[in-house]
Image 1 (cartoon, rainbow, N blue to C red):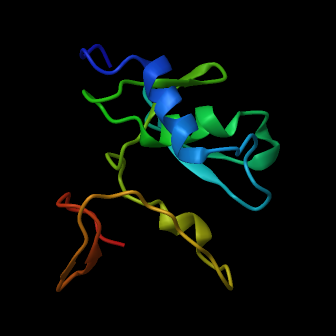
Image 2: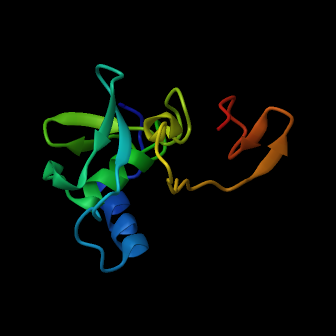
Image 3: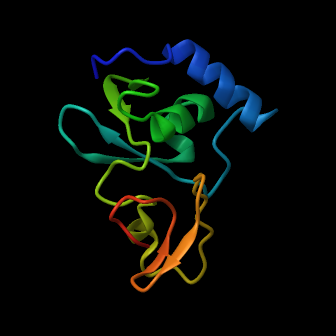
Length: 122
């Protein structure tokens, strides 16, 4: 968390450019992140009172790259560093789900689809 990285305000500006006119978390969309102090996974819901910019920045914040993002009173980051890259387990039991994952590589391996070279498949 103390690594020199992109300042959070610049990172959030980049997120705003990426999201365009989106102001709030869309209904039925849930964004995941990890609390830096407790390692607890947080699932940010549309009615949480957290802005879509803060939620997406916290979900995309990567250690040593973008630094942590405040989500209310918690310091969070994920950047695919959590115990699972996409947190797909939270949709278990759903009849239909769309999982959005940002990654620079996609490769098929015998264990299944891998979105980066970290050892966590979906």
